[in-house]
Image 1: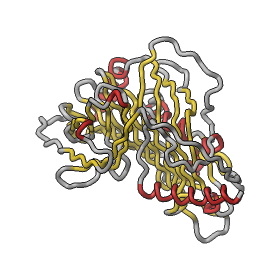
Image 2 (image 1 turned 120 degrees about the vertical axis):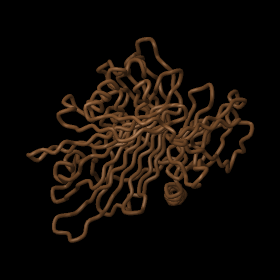
Image 3 (image 1 turned 120 degrees about the horizontal axis):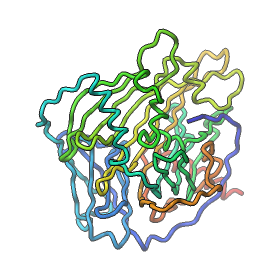
Image 4 (image 1 turned 45 degrees about the horizontal axis):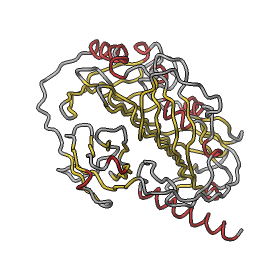
Length: 416
C-alpha cells in the first residue's frame, strides 16, 4: 500500500436514495456470554446463501436480507466460540443482542516442533487447490478506508465493489470495478497538506495469503522466517493449530518483513485466519515502502503496521471473507520540534459471491492497482445511500465524524 501526498480541493456531489422494498435490515451486537465483551470482526452469514457481513470493532453489525431469504437463519461465527444459529423471524430490526459461548479447551495435547511447523506451512500451500478450489470467484464487497489525524477523522471513503477474484494458479491479478461509492472529507483538518491513499483497495486483496503468499513470505520463505507452533484451539467442531512466524535475525540491516500468526484447520490444513505486522524498526526503509510522493523537507515513517485476513467455509471450500489494514505513522517537517500522528485504516468484506467456472472476460476498463479511490468517488450526504447492499456497520467514532462532515458539506451545498 502506498501513501500519496498531494494538495486537493473537496467537491460536493449529493446522491439520491435507493428503494428498500426488496430487503429488510437487522442490527445487533455480538458479545461474549461470560465476560460480556464485544466480539470484533465476527462473521454473520445468511444460511443457505453467500450473503454475509462482519461485526465492527465495537461488536456491532448490520445485515440486509432479501425478502426471499427471510424464512432462513443467521449463522454467527467467531474463532474460539460455538456457532450460533438464529431464526431471522425471531430478530427485531434494532438492538439484537447475540451472546456466543466460548468453547472449553478439552483438546488433546499436540506437540509440534520447529521442523513440523515448517512442514505444516508447506502443506498449507500444497493443499490450496483442495481447500480453496481453483476457479474464479465473482465477489461483491464493501470497502472502507479512512484517514485520521491524531483522534480526528478527516476522511472516510466507502464503496461497493465488484471483484473478479482470479484463481491462485493464474498470474492475472484480481480485477475491481466500483459499483457505488461515497466519501466524506474535511481537508481543512489536514492543515497545509493532504493525504490520499493509493492502491488501498488492491492492498486489501494483496494481503490474501492464499491467493498470493509470495507477497508476504517471498519465495525464500524458510530462509527469511522462523515458524513455530504456539497453541491449539477450536472453532465449532474444528481443531485449529496456531502457528507463529517471525523474520529471522540478520547480521546486516534487513529489509522490513513480517511477523504474525496463522490459524490452521488441523484436518484440512486450510488457513482460516491470519494476523501479521510489518517490522518498522528501520524507519527509513519502512517509510519508503509507504511513501509515493512527498515534499522534500517532510519526514514520514510508520510506527505500526498491522493486517488481518479471514476466510469462511462454504460447501467444503474456504473463500476469502475479510481483510483489514491499520497503519499509524508520524509526519514531521524538517526542523520542527513536534511531529503529527496519522492513522489510516482500510477494510474489505466479501458480502456475496459465486463461483465462475467459465473463462472470465477481461475488462480493460477496470480499476488500476494504483487507483486513488478518493479521486474516483464523490462526496455524498444521503444517509440511505447504500440501499440493499450490505456494509460494515460504522464504528461510533466514524459515524460521528461522517455526520459532522455531512453537516458541513450540506451547509456548503445550500450556500451555493
